[in-house]
Image (cartoon, rainbow over all chains, first blue to last red; front, side):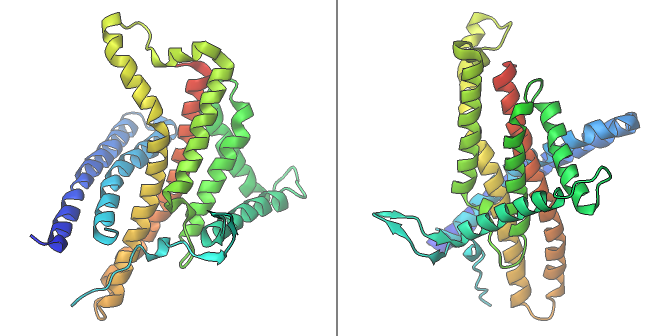
Length: 75
Length: 243
């Protein structure tokens, strides 16, 4: 296997990290909808935490995406 | 069809005014230029909007007041009692990151926070500062931060190293989170822009995706500044109140 194709495969593998980010973000917002549906008055208190959770969950997936970009375009 | 993609070109640092002191390269770069613009803009916004401060704020004054109140509220609710003296620090961090993220989205500009050295410097300032605050406030007692209360001694052997690790990994996670978000976002924009440029007729689709992505990036730019500031507040609470 030559280097170019190994790079492509590696970048593709690195993108698997985004599965976790997808699950995490889905979890965060499903929990937000759940809690707001149960107690609509709590929306103002809960929403900032949801967006904090969204950003934290998204960041972990982006680590993988950044690695994929590095493999493709830097090395 | 070979598509020539150079999506990382936008992160290149160019020397505008080359300057060397001995072996040290202290050139004025495009990164430094963007930082200067950011600082000047923030200062101008705050100084000019509060120059003729009125009891009933005008448009610009209410922008500044909203930003101020937003961060002040964040410090009060997250950093706990007695953290108000660190408000200027958190406010400066938040404004700097927010403005450099948002200005980075302007086409052909430069994103300061997409360089790990910049975000790591910011995170290192936070980490060292918070540790010093904790040691000054609690002295030797500060080490209690690493010992959870009400835990059997046997379990402590396992928990203390974990707590230590999670404490010392903070500057890295804090900096990599911001850096990776900016890097991945801007690279993605450039890649879809490259698609749109290389396929002529159906360029509408990647362009449409790009429009949506710019919207997402605006959200991410604000959100990451918020996350950086709020995590600084949480670390401050740890140092001030030890759990």
